[in-house]
Image 1 (cartoon, rainbow over the protein chains, first blue to last red):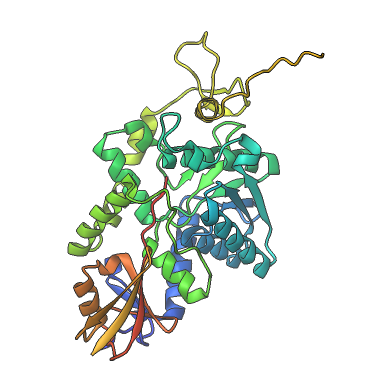
Image 2 (cartoon, rainbow over the protein chains, first blue to last red):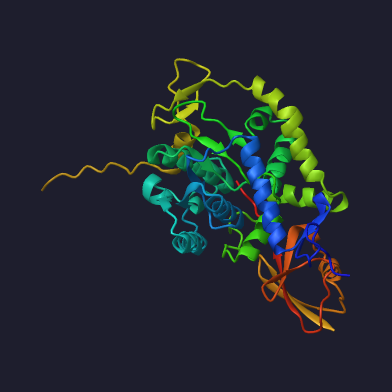
Length: 317
Length: 67
């Protein structure tokens, strides 16, 4: 027998097992909107007058987020960072541009190679970080800086329930309490050099953001980043998905239990002193040795990736 | 009865015989239902939806890796 929508009893198009529910198209949109509105309200993520910068990659999560924020009436511009990953980056940028054009929305484009002198494929295997590590670091830096320079109040990212559960899983396996302390649906701007960061999709599974795009007719990049295959987060997601299949709601309980009962305890313990990077002026953690000049992780990584050109003396005659 | 399934990413196509419902197809493909969307003619299918002979469906993985 065909599945029925939990709200209207019409024919369902998607099942959400962790909520013991299935929805038709319209009721699914209602459910998604409700989850996002609830996330925003619970954590006071956005004020109606806020200028929001949505970090978009061309993937399902960030485009679903941008679409939802525009539908909810927020002043949301998109920010696309070109990472220089060949045809994949070109297609991603085009998808974001087409999304923005169709809605009359503003897309701000930044380019890692043009502005900082390296691409992610060039960074792979150099400088001590994985390509995903350099990519994440570069994105966090550029998003924060672009938001500050552009006068935005908030940066919104498309992190979903699966992303957050996988990151928490990885951090827990290592008992990386400092990283856990920073994992929350909202990070306030605790310093003039830091912009507030929010994750309005953290209540939605990634299968739901993909379904939202399919049902809404949002063209997103289905292909996976060619550099990401087999990375740690993918492996952790597969492990969690196997557990979820046996016991629906596992990921939700893991993440929400942490957010509701443990996150606060770790946040109190994590009181890092902040300073201005001596190279770029952005906010970073103060070094343990007060005599040492603070240098942020992005500038340290960039120095390893971008070698200064050798100086060649040219003599006349 | 034969169903053609296009799985992506990465893109590959397989033919599967004698599967009555979407759940049977995913079981035969050894794919977790919670990790994919199944799409036929642009419409989403649930695990209980019935398949027909000659159906062409897309099994789209909804898992993406991040930094």
